[in-house]
Amino acid sequence: MRTPSTVVMLCTLGLTLAAAMPSAHADGAEIALHGNTRGAPACIACHGTQGEGAAASGFPRLAGLDAGYVHAQLEAFAAEKRTNAIMTPIAQALSAAERKQLADYYSGLGRDPGTVKAARPQADKVDPISGSAGAQLALKGRWENALPACVQCHGGRGAGVGSAFPALAGQPALYIENQLRAWQQGTRAPGPLGLMKVIADKLSTDDIKQVAAYFAALSPDRTTRGDTP
Amino acid sequence: MKARTMLALAAAILAIAAIIFVVTMRAEPDATRVSPDATLAPGPTAKPTIVKPVAAVTAFQPPPETAMPKDEFGQVVKLGRDIFTHTERYASQYNGSTNMNCSSCHLDAGRLAHSAPLWAAFVSYPAYRSKDRQVNTFASRVQGCFKYSMNGTAPPLGDPVLIALESYAYWLASGAPVDPKIAGRGYPKIPKPPLPPDYARGQQVFTQHCALCHGADGAGQTDANGQPNFPALWGEKSFNWGAGMGNLKNASGFIKANMPLGLGGTLSDQQAWDVARFMNSHERPQDPRFNGSVAATRAQHHDSPDDLYGTTVNGHLLGSGTSQAR
Image 1 (cartoon, each protein chain N blue to C red):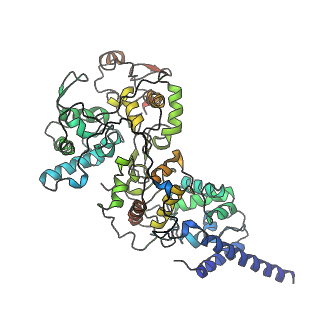
Image 2 (tube, rainbow over the protein chains, first blue to last red):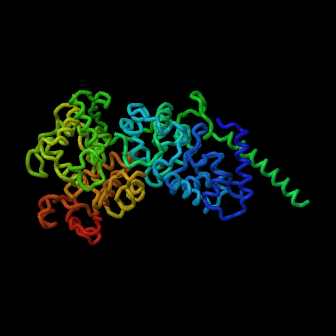
Image 3 (cartoon, helix red, strand yellow):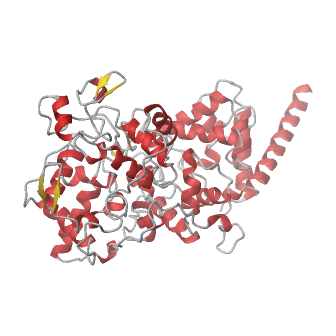
């Protein structure tokens, strides 16, 4: 767990660096590393130096996510359609142009196989057990409950499809768990077609834990191979 | 003097900002690990959402995947399952131009009732089919899937691909009666809607409920690794004009029961028919039975009000294969 003192240090560092950067035209990388002059702290303080996320705190991986998806989330935070006490003020402290620049920046990080940093050092080495309950939900779903497999929309190996279905591979388990609970509790807008609220409502506490663990253990690296059969 | 004051002020602001940041972070539910007994655990909202079933009849249940035999036969059953769900990877020699798998239309790897489950097909053949005007075995029925739905080549009888698919279907049908009227077979027959199926209304349904996954151009979508993910609904990567899904009755039944994925049963009968008409009002690969004339091919194979082949939509003769297919 991140201690408050670490957070204070990181925040202060981010804000100090931000204050030292007078440019109003900072591009995505500059904001990510230093924040902006209007109170948005450096993204790296929570999302990692390479956008890899922080497994222990459940801060999501941003590297390699679809730009349209990241942009839509920043807009949703700013408009308070996605409830998050940290991200709402940050997104509101970013200009519309900066939100777009950051989405492009993080989308471009770690595009090449092998260059992606895992949120946990061991994540690349863990091969999800194909017979686990999480694998079952991820790869096959639970159709007797009209629950499709996650990969049917989120792509083979959870690689993501377009800007509506984000990559799940290598996301911290706690982050995935928190999002599924947020949909259940209505603190995250249900998204396109209201799909994720319907999906999340069909998941038990244990389902959520299992499926989150499955995707967290998958490498976020791009691959030429598709889904694990 | 003034600079020093400003510096002090800046430091104070920074300190306050940092404190606010920490406080908000601590108050952030997203960032807090929830213990199993915490009050944040799924409440009443977490109970399963029941989607109204299209047909109330209890359908046969195929054996669970975990019961798949591990012996020599089981290996072939498993291959059949893999071909079914990853058709291009395991049967590329017969797969055509489509970006589909067998499981694109036969959901849950051919297990799901009302989504043309394999177990129901297996116990329904041999049977006479008007499509080719002869008795079809199960194997020749599957050959038709490759030829029409996958826009590919029929594997010859006795081919390992066909044997594997037949073995998988046989295993899924374990314990089912031989009965072409078995509940859950094919796609549900949706009553004719109050209004005749309409292109413009169908386009609205498509834009609102289908384009998210299948794309505004109906061409489907690949995943971030470039692998086909959502199948094409028309155009060169879709099923050809000879496929069963080209018939509005089949298409509306499939759509009503199963689409959008995870929200089956949410469209009205009218919406299902309208969007089926919109989908099949677009060009797609030629019917392999094409005899040189669209009109004659329609007369021979498509003579039904539920079949748009050989009709003119928006000034285009469907089946004449223009750039609309690409």
